[in-house]
Image (cartoon, rainbow, N blue to C red):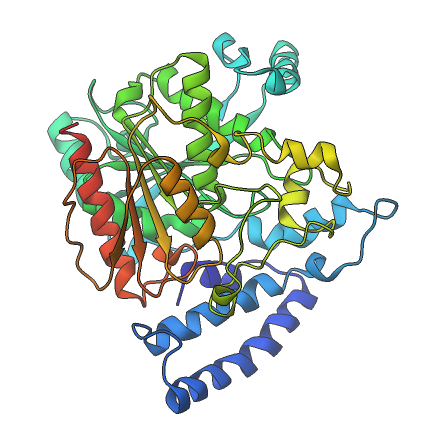
Length: 430
């Protein structure tokens, strides 16, 4: 079962959401199994677990009632949407049984260099943070540090530090390399907790501690608040003693969009780039010119974009409660929203993953082409390594849907993790 569905199914939900999930899941599981036996898999490399998982994600996300609400500019209710999203903002899976452990750290936006706006669009956010700090109530966010118990034990013994100190958001040594993961969720939902198994898998593959920060959500805090928080966290790591060249940034879906945008922001302010960037099923184009693969929508759980709807996720993220107009259409082409319009010359090496049958595949193809990353198809449990000297790399995983990395029933979930490990090791040579 995919962690996206597990986190939601086990999380706190309203009675109505529980009833909706129980009703649809009880019908769907039986139908999906029957279809698999009668008609075979939807994709040649899908097993029955993969097929059930893909459908259960649709059920889990479909339980959020705001998607079916009829709203216009007069009755738009941001609070109603936020309340409906609560179960999807605090989901988690456990990793202790898999030999993992984690700690959650709160951090404050209080140091003076965190109030330096990197672009005029962030000025009001920076000003607000400074006012909060000056008033003695600095804004706070949190991040989770994920590692294996074996790594923690060995590190604490070799460095002569306590078990808990291995979870600190400070370098364990002056040249420690870390992987920072920005979680997905359409900028509206999600949490580091639901990614812990994936992050533990990547920790074991790379040997790096993995840090997953939170950020503010729309529609309460629309663009560019979430991106600004992630930029501040990068600066926070530098303040804590990490070197930019020892930080690898990664994200999935909306979080991958954030990782790509961070490269552009750092380039704009003349700051050092991270060691590399990993974009898992990124959303690189939110403009009206974006593509949607209609054929893939029957496999994937990501819907097509209806910009006429006020509850469209892109509209909720950028301009909640407003109808599309020429000004908004132009805004959606800003590189900090749609990185496909950005110039990535001089940025860190980029490694892209997409699923072959995900709705966003055409957009991801176009972004990869724009940065000179040639497509390679990956199928099966083994990763072949890289047969290229290209700086940027693009891999499309056969038969996979959006953020398949969380679906452990797929072989490609494991080859993708191996690919990330290979990319991390490749970065040491660049």
